[in-house]
Image 1 (tube, rainbow, N blue to C red):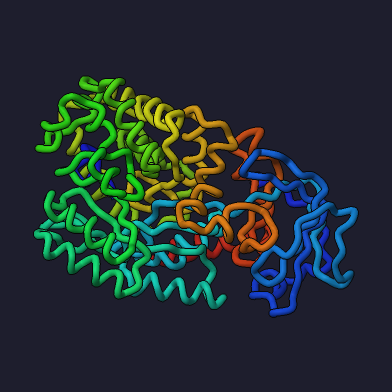
Image 2 (image 1 turned 180 degrees about the vertical axis):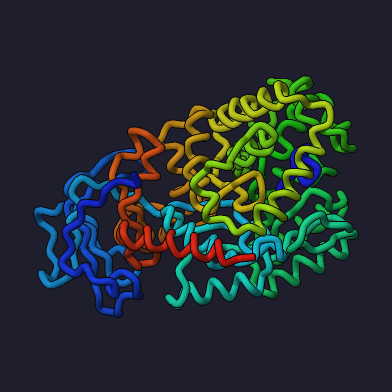
Length: 476
């Protein structure tokens, strides 16, 4: 979660011919001996960008059992099959920065966020701060097939300073607090440790020390009291929102450690040589960046943005809009200080330039949105916008697609299980009616989604969206 100023930092028509087109096949978890055959599909190799036309992909339960030419593929002729001619198959997408249960700020998120992710082809998320027990419960229900949702990795509550600004946070005032919190979260089953912005300097390095001892990754904000270069050298696994990057690219970095950060000052003191030196450190250490570019644009331009006619608003409960989003909007606009709109627009463009520079320097990237935390970020939908922002920063469509597919698999050390359409991998897949390598916006032309072996064709995804709209209207 980031607040501006660095304080806290269509769908295509599906032409499917299916032998079994009744609802139980798609809406229920397949029996242990069930197969699903995708025929005549073009498989997109997200490692190389190669297209493999006329392929048959056989799914056995929740794994990919075979990928090969349709003309020679063998399988039981009574197996359920789908003619996917004209469709493109890619790995399911990941949103690598979300908040699922953020205190009481997003009531009803189970019925809103989870299905919106799936309906938009987001089959995995990295939660960056939530109520641990609740999210672990959701994950168990999803894995058991009783709840529709993506794969989830979560840290539980965020670690922040003595007076945290957000819910789902643990207060850290001393190194002792830090050691205790990291050990406790590891014991409770957190997947990693999430840092926020206000942690005191000594406690930050205590977190790094304890995380190494507990063999658990620490990720998130570069805290205000430390340099990005220091956190990279301490083996922080990922930075969010580009926090620390502009500070470390300025001769005023020491002053920024004391506060007084504004986009205007970042622009005025930006030093390309310092930025290149920092990029070299990040590349050497392979410190991942999750810049949340849609969030950044939304926060800086929220006072001149009009979402009143956005069709996605119908999926948002009234309380999210009138309470939580209103609170974020007020905090963001109050933080603008002397930065006028022209400066903020320049900063949004400068962020794209810096992301492009880091990418060319060999720094690895992840796609994330900070959904649904304010500035009108929409679960699932905004991930597609994020990929478009990467292209605007100079990534090729393939490189942008990698930030939400193979890169998350590499980040989690699960490239043998996720991130590509290959035999043996988990069946998290996305069927598209147009080639995303021609235009990254084609990731939105969703013909079908397969989540952990469960197949949802277009009509079912539309029904899913209808249920979300109903749930949103029922929320207070």
